[in-house]
Length: 164
Ligand SMILES: [Zn+2]
Image (cartoon, rainbow, N blue to C red; front, side, top):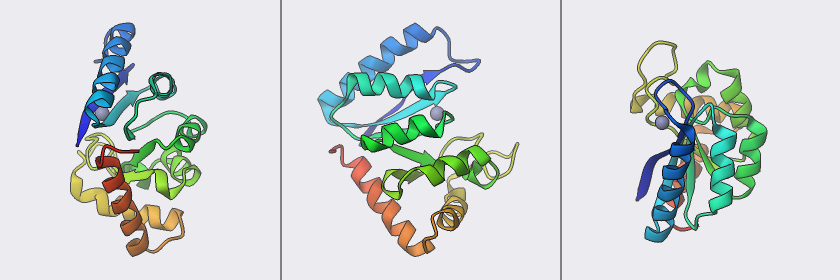
């Protein structure tokens, strides 16, 4: 089980960022005390969200969902075991391709939500598109769809276990 989405949003709807950080920290502590995994939302604030997470250092698995920050910051977090869920916009975004290339398979999940991050611009995303992401990811990682699908399923189970 997991708590989420929680995190930081520097988009139009985000509001006061210091207030957001306060609630984000509280959510991280709650997840840690209840042994629940964390699904983290970050919009234009990936590096900041990672900084807060590393500072709080919760004792539970973390997924950075719809991450839009730099792949170098992501790689740093991945070394500490943080997951990144890859959305179907992988089919059209050089940034997402760079992110998927940079991160090890053991840190990847498939994103089933993120309405704006579908395979085609302007089209609402849906969970069925997860298979398109898997196919594209298998090309990027030079893996068969079957073996990559198995590996990502194991990652999802590890993430949802609530245990590191
Ligand atoms: Zn989100």
